[in-house]
Image 1: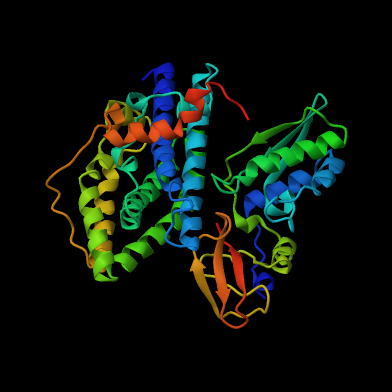
Image 2 (image 1 turned 90 degrees about the vertical axis):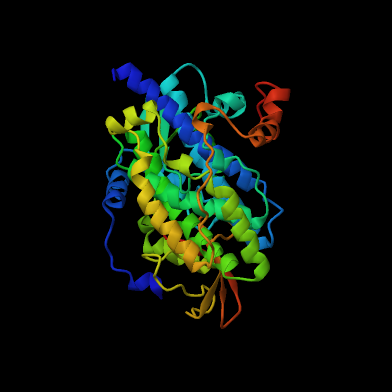
Length: 174
Length: 255
């Protein structure tokens, strides 16, 4: 599978992001937010997607930094609401969301584990580059056809498998 | 320029770029449920969302610089035609599918180069917005370029329609590369983009695509401009009456 043949090079900003989590003084909050999934793709969490960037505590107020996937992704508002709701339910009302634009979100931040979850969910995970061959998430065939550059959301393209005829979304590398 | 003048110029510049994105995004959104087929309907509305998202980021930044209580919505919903500073090509009615795709292609080539240049802006926020926009514009351009070839080198009907669209749009393209004192000042300060420097590469790319799509390059014997000064075609007012209806009828409405 494509997911396993990737060269394991971690982008610098993703290395930093994982370090922020590993060195955080608030591990329980990171774990709490692991339960918040992408509203459009409930197979992966906001952490796995790379949207969740940082968590800080300032005088009892939790400040969560997120980065938008696409400029116009309508799911961003829902993600922010879901984070605030999860925190409120855990006893942190009045939390705040900070949107950070830079570094620009990239699918290269997604772990192999997250890619596998996407595939199991029926979405072909993003390749390394635009030219990485796409495989059918259902039967694994590489005989696929691009039906549309944009699928059900901006981050995905629509493909069809030439072997099992499955119509599937491909998470575009960006 | 003094710091406060530079800040105000940057704010106006952010509004200009926001206006370009909002007006084009709205035109694209008009295809929602009107696309020629489902996949294309989805693609058009997804691209529309990218531009509307871009507009939100530019407007939010302008509001942040203004620090006068205004928000992204203030800029989008409470200004009239003369205060909108978008380049005219973005406001032209969506026309038929060929017209929308021809416009998209012409501005996608431009936008990609423009945002690549803006990425190196000395202003961190503008650079960050551009960094996101570049990635999206690459996908936009790939698709609009495909459609240029498919329609141009397609049937007699599709070729004829696309040629007509290119002819009608051509005179609006010189404005993409014009600049005024405000933009020159910002370019000199390393904040803005000097659009004139993008022209040669744009013309080369567009000429090559037109030739590959078996289309004639228009003579370029007419041109229209005025958008940056608030002088618009009649189409913008009609568009704003729809876009702004809710906030005009119920000022301050929240949901």
